[in-house]
Image (tube, rainbow, N blue to C red; front, top):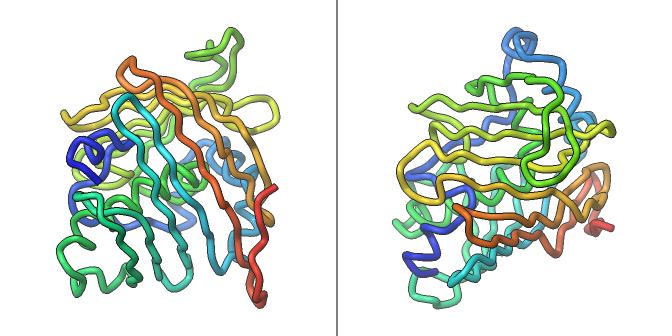
Length: 247
């Protein structure tokens, strides 16, 4: 993965290690607007505890950049397996446990782990609306879609500048349809490194076991054409030996 490729990741890769928050107190959840839980439930929140593993490949195409990274994540153990390329374009395969990231080589700490955070946030962001206690979630009511001609419920998820999100200070704006699904989103990066604004549709919906996944995102990154997709999406359920492919 080249330096320019890393700069183009959408949303941009985090600097250092950011911890995914998979639980929060009931008190902090009660402070959130009801739509936060409603969104997460639409995507399978009530069944997430059944998930032993999630497999997917993150694919990003913008002018001059073509990225493909394959992951297997075990939410309960924090075990991550990665297959892709390093900054010099050489094949890389590695497995690590996120809670022990400080024991890993520099390339895992500084490149692979931030890439995992970025790609996982893109795949599962509807859950993070509910999971991430540091985020300020605002239900802004029905507003015009940023790309389409219709309207949808606009939900803004803003992270503080000191921590949280795929990178600190980010704001994600989700436009939720009447079926509870994200139709489009606008991502505003918290830091100065581009892209500062990503706008894309959410389509290609598939079910991977109990989880609902948008596998096709198309729009712009700082005005340039963008296509982000997830392929080879599957989940492994508790007690199962086989993967359930998204379909």
